[in-house]
Amino acid sequence: MSKGVALEIVGLQKSYPDALALSNVSLQIENGQAVGIIGPNGAGKTTLIEIIMGLTKPDLGSVSINGQDIRDDANLTATLGVQLQEANLFPRVTVGKYIDLFGKLYDTQANRDKILADLDLLSHVDKKFGDLSGGLKQRVLLALSLINNPDILLLDEPTTGLDPVAREDLWSFIKEWHVGSRTLLLTSHFMDEVERLCDRVVVLNRGRVVADDTVPNLLSHAPAGKDTLQSAYSFLLEGVGHE
Ligand SMILES: Nc1ncnc2c1ncn2[C@@H]1O[C@H](COP(=O)(O)OP(=O)(O)OP(=O)(O)O)[C@@H](O)[C@H]1O
Image (tube, rainbow, N blue to C red; front, side, top):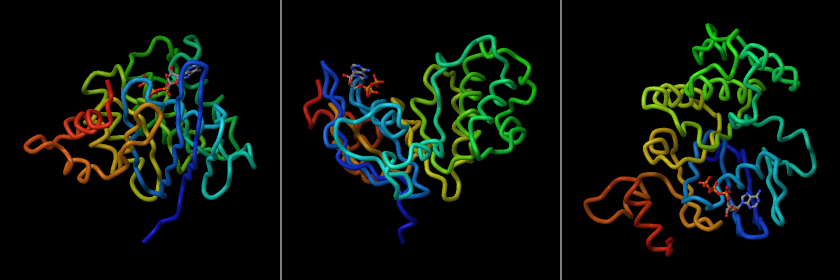
């Protein structure tokens, strides 16, 4: 039974002077799904996420959140959980100050102390962002993305640059957050991350969707004896002519 559509993306097209970033991309993501967007460098993953966030305008096409077009209501994108990049934050501001500042930006707020406790950040609130390790910085960025208590969370390469233990910690947290009817959309270059967190995978290549399926179905298309998502993905890209 359908649980309702959380995100509807119809016919997105986006060109830059030197690149076609997205070409006729359409996706329907139901409430409660965890969807991984994968694809080679320059495939259009970040552009897609930025358009959904309302940060980049498409040349053509539309994005709807819970049935409402984001062009009709600028506040709709404020209901999303959006993960910033590390470079967007000032290094000398403390974790606690950032949590408070971000909380004030939204009408709906999550329980600040619960988020900090769940992400093991309570003992770091007085530290400056720039003094934190890479793993802690990622946890702070995740905490900030959850401050408006979103039901839809968008993560762009959430564990890039982290060591295996820090990745595992973040995966456990994200997995737990997603339980129930919450919706997750993430981009990644790591097949283990996508297998661990996502029940559906969208493969982009040169701005086009070249596969959109469950992990088991994608695995069934891998060459005989190579039933990993990595080999299914490589095989698929060879088939569509990725150099
Ligand atoms: N602001 C921009 N100005 C010009 N070209 C851009 C801009 N943003 C993206 N592009 C181009 O659009 C294409 C898609 O880029 P995008 O960053 O969405 O890909 P990606 O799949 O996220 O890549 P990566 O895995 O390397 O992060 C690329 O050719 C990129 O160079």
